[in-house]
Image 1 (cartoon, rainbow, N blue to C red):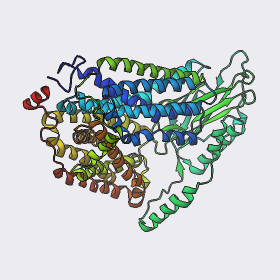
Image 2: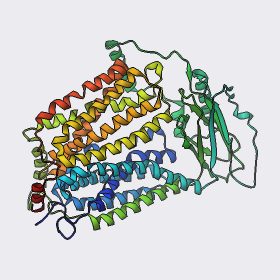
Image 3: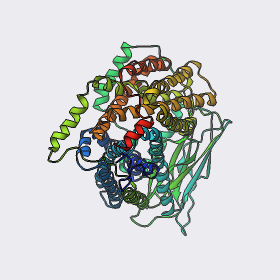
Image 4: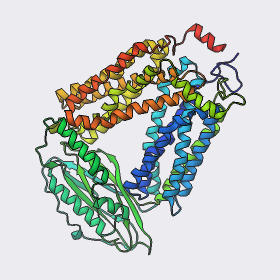
Length: 631
């Protein structure tokens, strides 16, 4: 007797899923967010230009795009359990490699090599983990835990984007000069915009110690500022910082700007113009020449630094409302030549801001290389722990075995895996459903935030950046998570087929809230927040059916590889419509665009009757439970 969910002794029904599933999907999310998000922050703190960061880190996404191409190897060679353990060791090695390469002179080149290793290891780990999920759990458990696994994956996302960045900032603050703090407060009354005259700032010296002088508090009026005046101040600040050597060379080129490239001149520009002529509509123009008000602060050192030694300071927002922003990411280089010249940082308010808020900004001048080395070594140690922990607690399902057969040709099995997936009798319906299930959502997700942020003069809702962060980062995240968990729980009771109609409805019908918002244009943050919460809850609840359907069509000998292929089509279904959604919205406007989104939800409903899903898939029945225990 055996069971898909066995413990290390091979006995059925004794493996506690809660011991390994949360940590497995937390471990799946961490390297992804490190490669896609944390690497960008890391390189920015290390002084790499935005152009280089965007170019090279974008290529790091490639392993997740092409992972279906090598997913059959995970099926054919070794078990999913072994792949998970080995890949977690490789991820730990990749993270350690990044940490060890940070202090070397050509760190950018070498860390990119290890990030590539990390990316391929992580993508392979995803394949193995998703395959193991289907092997180690009964179909009923797969349905029940689908929301739980998504929740811990999202926790990993939040950890990578938040906690690890905070940890790096902590070490930066503890390894250099005292932290510089600047508080920016808005005032409702009119104030004269200060003239940009950094040369007139009185300079103080303190040879006994080395630290930064700056303003403690800046006040900025919420009254709008003429666009040309604001632009002039920003340009003067950039020119001042460039002239006195505060920006690294790469940053100087970025600030000074470059002429439009060949693509803009020859392709995107003419195409946009042609579309505008063909589908011309009456465009709403912004009549106001006002933008968010401007303020600035300055920094200089109390005494001259040591010869041939630079003092690097990164100035960023620490806490507070995101409606107060830094015009650019400031990374200053102070040395023997410019230590007693004030470097300038410019703040700008959201143009729609009409209330009193505040934000605190921090300048850190610690040992940035050491700080990030510690962070990456910490994450590497975490993955060594995952490697050891999962080696002990991951169950050993009897169905988790290579599918190539003894003496079989690896290449033959590799090709057979793809052919088996695409030779299904109902493959056309399957692929269509994978591509259109999120057809409306794939376009909505690209334009929802711009609609909420755009001013009312252009038919947006005019939210501030801070308001948007609260709605999506707090209310939306909670609703999304609750919807996902509830979807897994209810699907486990009556199965996927029973809930499919309801989940497709939940996925698509709440998109109507954007039609409602675009026509009624409410100003109440409560109404807007509640509308977004409804849409996000429906998305979390409805996405459960999509995940379960991909698991369902992946059942069989090559379930790991087939699930990876299904996720590839899922990504394609999001990518292609999303690419054209912005152009379409500009042509037809927000109201018509959201109506179009609702029209795009219809194909998913039309395909449901042709899916042929087993009514018992995902639910727990006495007969099915007994069959699984004696499989």
